Length: 303
Image (tube, rainbow, N blue to C red; front, side):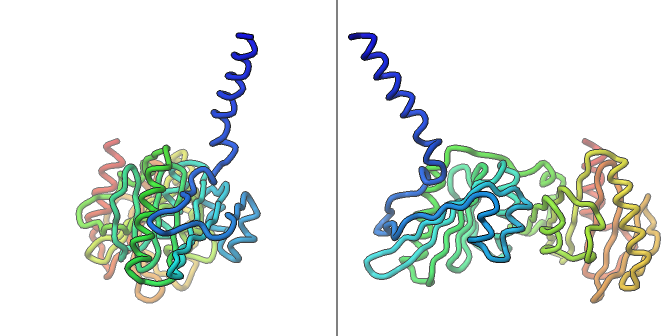
């Protein structure tokens, strides 16, 4: 009898342990929050099925490292509607990357435990661990905005994992860095959406970061596994800029620094430092290296 009881308890404990994993993302979806209740059945998409859900926009998610998404609508008795999307990415850095892709420098930062979140108009994006949460209201009524906040807070508590931003972020000088301007890249598509240097992947980009500064300048940092890879990518980009009539190129005063003038009066300074390529985008031409370019170079050399 005791053996049977232990067997039954063992089965129950085993089931209890496996339920959250079996439910996957659905285990994170709140039942109802402050008058907002689930409307209709949740929809789930994994892998290439994302192209069925997002027509023409799934590529960027896959570049960052998409695994699956669950979609659930919420309604109120007054007719309000909110759509919840929970994306599970391959790791926290991938989720951070797609979060930076979707947020805006003009949004309002929100404080939730262990998470970064931003509200803009009637959209709310939240990053925590390997998850990106996107909430979309369909009006800007006060009850809808509060519903976005309440659902986001519930998700921040329900997601147990946490994670850190990529180490590249720490290379961006903080002085005069615009809040919410940081963009993370895990491939050329995200870079093309941030700034199109060329119609091809001239940097052979696998990982990068961008930060915008209050003086109108921007700093791009592209990372490579070895100095030889970074140098080869830098020389390939230099060759491209030399051949492209849209750019004019000349040597700068700093070590290995090149100066570029590009389309629509855009101005750049580029430099290869160890396993990195640094590119500063400036509001006006200058042969003096931008302060944030100098500071980032010093951080790399001082690591």
